[in-house]
Image (cartoon, rainbow, N blue to C red; front, side, top):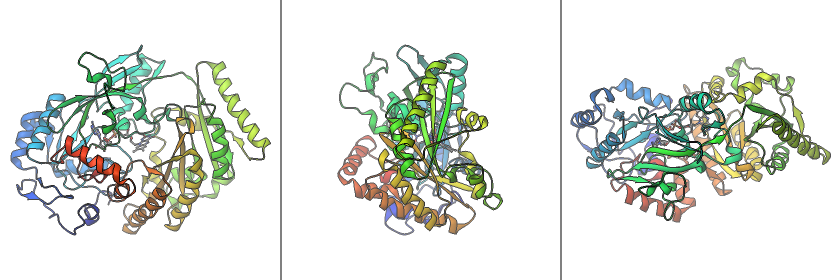
Amino acid sequence: MLWAQSEFVNRPFSGRENVYEESESLGGAEARPPSCDLMYNSVTGEIVSQLAGIVGEKYVTNSKAMLASYLSKGIMGIEAELPEAVVRPGNLDEVRAVLQLANKNKIPVTPLSGGLSGGFSLPAVRPGGILLDLTRMNRILDIDLDARYMVVEPGLTTGKVWAHFRRNHPDWAPPIPDGAPPAATVVGDALERGFTLATSLYGPQADLVLGMEVVLPSGKILRTGSWALKKAKPFYKWGPGPDIGGLFLGAQGTMGVVTKMAVKILPHSEHKDIVAFGFDSPEDMVNASLEVLKKEVSVMVQGGNWWLVPTRLGPEEKIDLNMTKKSGVPDWFMNFELWGRDEADLNYRRNLVREVMREQRDSGVKAEEWQLHPKQKASRLLKPNKIAIPYALFRGSYLFVTWYTPWKDAADFCRLAEDKMKAYDIPPVLWVAAIDNGRQSICMPILCYDPTDEASIDRIRMFNQDTSHMFYDRGWLNYRPDPTVHAPAVAENAPEYFDLLRSIKKLLDPNGIMHPGRLGLP
Ligand SMILES: Cc1cc2nc3c(=O)[nH]c(=O)nc-3n(C[C@H](O)[C@H](O)[C@H](O)COP(=O)(O)OP(=O)(O)OC[C@H]3O[C@@H](n4cnc5c(N)ncnc54)[C@H](O)[C@@H]3O)c2cc1C
């Protein structure tokens, strides 16, 4: 089961077995031992009534079917907990009132913008508490074409904002995740520090955030960056003093609820192309591509191994893996997505990439241009694209387990991950992309598994445990830390940092109601 409520979820937090009594009733009023040191209360019938008083009856539910349907959205987490109630506020005042109620009654709150964060960041952890669904707050509040940012609400989907810009501001692109479905959100992706359609050029989406409006559990409302000043617009991300905004990026909803975000928009053009090159080894792929990345001409540089191709085509038993070889898919490859201001600029960029690769060939590296079919190009250039969804076809489900490394370490990552995946009978599907012109890489084993087979799920868990230690030992960083695997390792590997984070969390959220257990925080 994708969202099985297993004992496994509880262990790493409590260090105690079975401390949590499974309660079928949503109305029980008892204080319960949670997954950490703090005590939480259940969402009682009385609390549900009070929530309905805040947001309206229509926007609160504790129907088991509805609660379960929310978890099934978080398709890529294998551990998750049913919330006890879903609440859908429509504005800032309602968010504030819900948080104050939850804080007063010590009830956990998990914020959700689109609910599609891959990996491990969304499904609630024990205890379930309130799932705060922000999808009703989905407006574009401002677009400033001079200062080049937009202000949006958390529920604004990438599909909606992309369509709006194509219709009304074709020369500009909102930063949307490169491969996420249109139901993902700009705010959720920025909070996750995700990779946008232009991450290879501009860095992770969090780098584009200029300011946020955040509601704290106390009900206090904070604005970050220049926006902190009463009369200022969110034109500058650094505020009047040290940057407070960073506390909410990568926080997985543990610090407060973001109700507005100002985020940069990017120059956009219809003059686009993709050129791709094949390589014999991950080392050649990484080293040759770095020479292109240093030219800083490509919005998205991403590739990986040949496994990326067949595992999207259908069920394992029906796929001929040799077909990829026969149809000319290189062992390792890298795509360079180019946006030119006009055809001449696009040509310049294409020629530059080809020239660098020619130099690589002259130095003995096999860096052959891979001629993509127009349909392949079109599917990559389509935004938001749905390119990642079909990996579920191969074994029934998949997980993205994502790590950041210095770009030069990406080949080493691929070798180690490939060996471990094979050892755990997981097809070694590996995706690699450049961040900020190859200053960093994002390396992602795509773990295809059978969600109906406990042994298959266990192999995923074991792979994660095993590689987590191995990768942290090499100084690499996990992107969406799983609370049961990666987060505890962060506490071990960065103790002073983690201690300070705990103190800050205590200051912002003294009752620990915000998404408890995430990031290994109470
Ligand atoms: C098939 C597929 C492909 C994907 N491809 C990409 C990709 O190419 N690039 C990429 O970056 N991501 C990708 N993702 C991951 C994910 O879709 C994006 O990161 C997404 O945009 C996250 O946004 P969301 O609204 O779904 O976030 P959510 O899942 O709602 O939330 C993300 C995290 O932030 C917290 N949170 C949410 N809203 C708030 C708020 N308002 N205040 C405080 N905390 C909050 C949540 O508790 C959670 O921990 C992909 C996912 C899928 C399913």
